[in-house]
Structure formats: structure tokens, C-alpha cells
Image 1 (cartoon, rainbow, N blue to C red):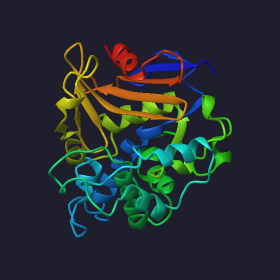
Image 2: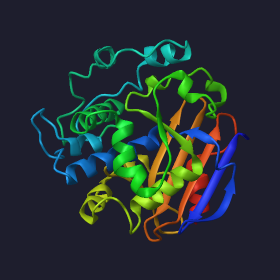
Image 3: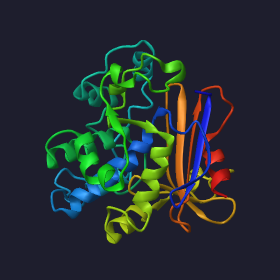
Length: 287
């Protein structure tokens, strides 16, 4: 597989594609899947988005407003990943990240938190006994006719394009590392946000209700915001792009659709050193 892959679909028709069928890591595009799965469980009455018995709600967790800390800034985390160490137990991760103390009072700030999405995964697995993969497959993938899987062990990444990160243990992505083709990622987002979504209209509206994040504005994202597992922004051309970016050792992915044109979705994957910004390329394709 080349160092760069892309696909643009519109109403299920492939408009443009390059190496879009090879399996790749979806990295934090999985947050969109986790949020959608949680919303389906809430629709079924098996999960509450607003129960704040722990001092913060699942809705705040999914919007990164719960004040939960992250493991991304930990040098020891990145050193352990680079050394090929076995992933730490979740309790040790939380201890090392100081997750028992909050970065800010819940609801009074915004900070990206992978630990928050680990907690969301744990709540899903309690509400839908089994694995996150089983819940996502039954509630999201199968209704959309999409194929993807959750990588749990190193062998699960055999045949997946990891670039220089060969030997990576997917357990280091504590909220779960979904893998699948770029084409399937694009189809998933198009179906999820389209007229035949497995989500009710009220859940889609909740997913899109987002917090403005002007501090992240730049050449691509003119008015960035974050909803429930959904990055959103006005981009050059005047339309809103929505989806998610993800990155990990050796590669990055961006999967975005146009809010004003249901079914038009671009997905871009690039290995480290390819000289491609997946977000900028996805925005170009959408326009």
C-alpha cells in the first residue's frame, strides 16, 4: 500500500479512490463509533447520557467537558509504546495520569480526553454485556452494512497498514482501536449521518450540538467545535464538515462529510513522512 490513500463517496457512489480497500487503523475515528453506540443504547433505555452520579455525565464525557485528564501528555506512555511494552492495566493508566483529580469542574471547560472515552467504553460494555465490538456491530455496523472490527491483540493488526508502527499493541488505545478499510469508514459516516441512520433524529441533533473551540481555528478549520464524538467546523467553501480525525504511531486518518450534502464523505489516510495532511486533503475532496 502507498503512503497515502483516499476515497470520496457521494450517495454510495465512489467518486474518487486510491487504495481505499486496504485495512488501516481508524485511530480516534473510533470516538464517533463509541458516541453513536452510546446514543443507540440511550435510545433503548439501557444507558443514560445525563446521569451525573459520578459527578459528571456521559454526555459531558463524550463532549470532552467532564474535566477528565488524558494520557497523551505522559512521556512515560509514549516511551512504553515506543519500547513495545505490554499496555498497562487501566487502573495503572489512570493512576499515572492522575485521573482521580479533575482538570476543571465538570461542564466548566473543555479538554480532549482519551481516558474519558475509555470510561465511555466501559459504560457501554456494562449496558451491553460483552465487548464494545459486539455492541457497535449490532447497533451500528450491521444496520449500515459496514464491516469493521476491534483490534485487541498484536495479531489482530496482521495485514493492517501500520507503516513504521509494526509490532504496535492496539491495547495502548484504551478506548479501543477499530480497523477497517477507508471505504468502509466513509460508508459508515455517510450512513450514520444520512437519512437512513440507525440513530433517531433527536440523537443525531444531540450528536451535532457542539461546543465552539475558537482556540483551534486555522487554515482548514475556520470555526471548529466538538459535539458527541463529532468534530465539526465551517471550512473554506462555506460549508460545515463533520466527522473525526485520528492519529497514532506512524499514521493519521481523517473521515469527514458535508452537513449540507448527506452522503458526500471523504476519508484520507497517510503514513508518517508522506507529506500529506489528511484533514486538509479531506477538506479539498469535499469541496
